[in-house]
Image (cartoon, one colour):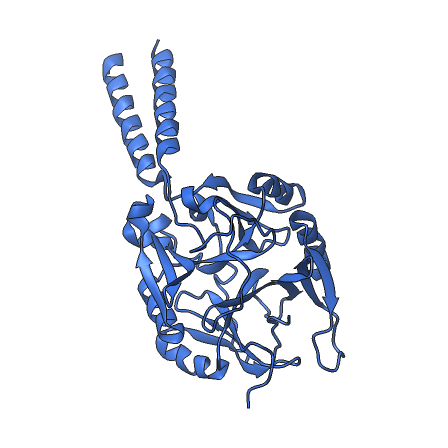
Amino acid sequence: MTMKTVMRIVKVVAALAVCSSLAGCDDVRVYGSVGYSSYNGYGGPGYGTSVRIGGRIY
Amino acid sequence: MLSRHLRSSAALFSALFLVACATIDIDLPSVADAPTGEHLPGKIIWHDLLTHDVEGSKRFYESLFGWEFESIGSAAGFSSDSTYTLIRHNGNLIGGMIDTVALNGRDDISQWVVVMSVGDVDAVSRRFAADGGEVITAPTDLQRRGRLALVRDAEGALLALLQTRDGDPADSEPVIDEFLWDELWTSDIDGATEFYEGVTGLQADLLDVDADQSSNATYRLLKSGETPRVGIMPNPLEGLGPVWVSYLRVENPAAITAKVDALGGRIIVEAQARPLGGEVAFIAGPSGAGIAVQTWPLEQKD
């Protein structure tokens, strides 16, 4: 394989990588970086009224 | 020779990538229909729902609270219209909804995110990191909305910090079926109180919230001057990680919970009387994101 062929392949791969990245680079900002949620995997039972929660007081 | 070509090509494409990304702007509307021009640090000024079930979430919140939805993703600069949706109630802007599947293919990050006002988002973000928290997304310009960062506190609870461009919404009386209160549920209320006092400048009051004052003085009210901004309390739910919980003002929590299952949500804590008055319940929408509903003012229902 000649150096010219190698460079051609490198450029095509790099161009595809750039296009792929650009397609999502706006959306992954801000909330796209959230890695997990406190509710993910939270399968706790319905608590009925056995626990007290908070809320506004003043 | 080959190595030199590879290095120069990589540098060229890296530069192109950075330049192109830097020029793609997200433009979201202000969080206030009538911005005040002032910053109210520590105030929760916006709520964003991250959900992997946009249509189910719309049905849920529309049926329970009469909310209206306007998809603006494409106009805002996202790659699809569903990525960002404005939430209104009686025409008033009250929050946003992000389609996590359209955003980045995730179906496991659903949650409500509180957005706290800060005067200098860069400085407060640095303080979060310095005090044991984590900056998830560095301060990012969102045009008319302002400059926003996504952070976790020292216990791992997620929230956003926003330095509004045109000012925060003014303090106002809570409206039925709109946001009423925000509260951190954590395993370390003393640590969390110290953390948030440090990073936000709010001052904490320690409160008894049980009518008989038998079980605790474990509620922390963080205030700006004499204005209560947020609460901190021990996490009451086993298995649920530290989380910011938002409360909606409703007329009758039991009437809300009666409809939850049929709309694809679930009841986590049934409607109950609060020791200091009023009623409260905790439910989850179709995507699993929890939200509380509460009567206000505190008087008990007849």
